[in-house]
Length: 340
Image (cartoon, rainbow, N blue to C red; front, top):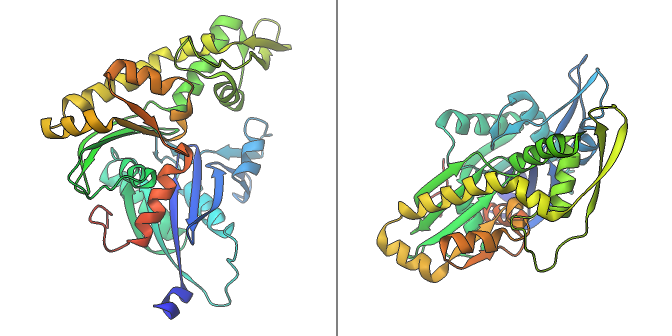
């Protein structure tokens, strides 16, 4: 085993719409935005991750930035493959004298089709993986939070990522009830962009909308510790001149209301579909929130008020899925829910 592991590199990858996290030897070695910058004329990869994100929305005609994943699935096969290959190269202690074969576990949304599943596997294989298994994101999130998923107890996980919101009831190592909707962090950003146009006559980009969401994003209008107003910079739609507008959290809570309501409706639908015995368990254990979207201020209180259930936000929600994928990698052949 020791000799085999010398020639095999085992990595767990949370291939997200917004961020990709890689775990190697039980620690996070890569945590980068899922974006790649490519030179149009030659097709050469110029930058990946943070460096590519800094270029996003600021490129000239010979450079294009691509987000290879949309709504949790691969939208651009070649860009996804290039991004995965470059991110695997970022792993430290990657300088082995001998060529190492890659063994990977990758997290995927629970609502994707077989064709989309195949695209993830093919991209990983093209990026150099010899052995690939897949794990559904809510299952990985549950493991990452510290829930014993093999127990005969029902647990509800809501994983709000960049492209999808995954809602699942898990028991006995399987997903009993599953609801996957394509409303998540990217939609929050789009709502903010739209609101700034309509309400303040200012055009802002994707990165600025993301910044607004992080600084003053909220799900409810009466927060206990409200964030300070945030100055947003963009282009005035009437004059075309750069402009600054100050926004507060209550405005953003109002503009995100419609998208959050859709997530609430999906949670209620998943609860309706849950077998009664598992519903009894969920009444005791509550709902667990993971993913970057769960960090939105007041979201836990809003969901709790809607469902009348206790809502717990994971300790490090951004990395819950990645941590769970890393644990699944250690139990490569033991866990029944790893998709071959």
